[in-house]
Length: 311
Image 1: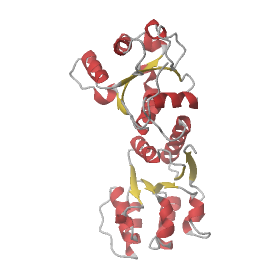
Image 2: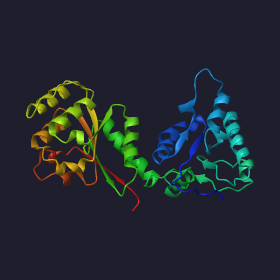
Image 3: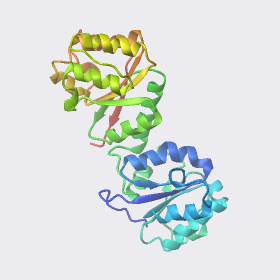
Image 4: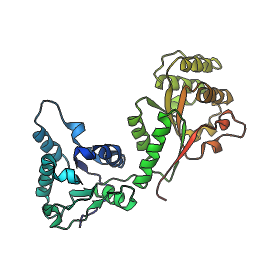
């Protein structure tokens, strides 16, 4: 049986896969492992032009404590993949140390060198299986704080909305890996900036306006109130669409300087001119954070995505 290490001691993980599984590996497997705290070693990150492929494969594999083998018929027919698999098996031929994690991504027979030890493998032919994702992540010392399929579905939905120009309220409960979620969303949407409303640097309205403009890549001198909003509006109207993650949005309740004029301006930029797309991270639903009749409470186009951690 494959030992399950404590998630408090993440290990470096080498991913061995064939390129026909590359989309799944990069879109789903790698983000989950990295967000869960594993140190992922993989060819696309570490290979250098001008160096021998096999030598680099071996060096990257040897730099990691564990090997995840993404098995499929194409994998088993690839000389490069079989080379990586055989090197991994030589390190733990009896599968006693838990350093090899076989993952079935398609129907295929386990190779004899793996089957003879009868290890517990991960079955992700259907990658919506929460128990199999949990087994994989635990085997790699990773933890998302939420079922992997739910975390991934929320990520894909959020990115799809943002890419088509819809603002999103990400409602977070029970402490899943939400910061890593935001980081992965920013990896996928290159122009998505981030403003942390808990930061002392944005306590005042003027400071927040300065931070928004700077994060959106705009250079502007921001005057004191009320003309700070004039500059915010003028600059953003003159630029391409700005996509911005605003985290710890719950704190707006305790920031009297974030007044009706600020939120009215943001609403106009989001709904009328459509120059601002927000990813609003909060612990409560967006509508519940604002009083009835508030300018932002009438934003009907914002989408809600829930990211629920394990109770």
